[in-house]
Amino acid sequence: MNRCGWVNQDPLYIDYHDHEWGVPVYDDRLLFEYLNLEGAQAGLSWYTILKKRENYRQSFDNFEAEKIIQFDEKKIEELIQNEGIVRNKLKINAVITNAHAFLKVVDEFGSFSKYIWSFVGGKTIQNHFKEMKDVPAVTEISDKLSKDLKKRGFKFVGSTICYAFMQATGMVNDHIESCVCYQKLSTP
Image (cartoon, one colour):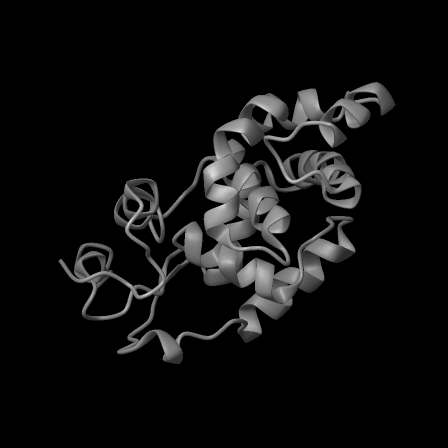
């Protein structure tokens, strides 16, 4: 079976590629999770974060923003000691900051999904890449998304992180054309 070139042979990674990456996500909690996990990835590989994802879910109350905004210094110190996540204080604090910003966006737009999908007109951008080297790291839309998220107080949301988030949540279909997932995620 032909897959995108970034997938290794770990069944966890194959499953993520085949069943999650590029599948449109509209659930607010899951979008918030992806945004923060992509931020945690900064300077690391997605594979590293994927292996720690269950620990992240446990450590950050399943990315329930209402719970995360209650985190205090004791909880932050506990997270810094947690070997199951990336123990970077800036990244840990960013999740808490992002929870506050996320809830403000939900108040303003009715849902985070409505806000985030507005950047692509509410539907997946269907790309047509033949090789992995053709897939961009940033786009004009990821630049706009990054700028707007930063303006709203989000952290670890640079354009590269935003584009990876867009890829993961199906805002764009960046599976290469020869990939087994390309056709099933193609939109007319």
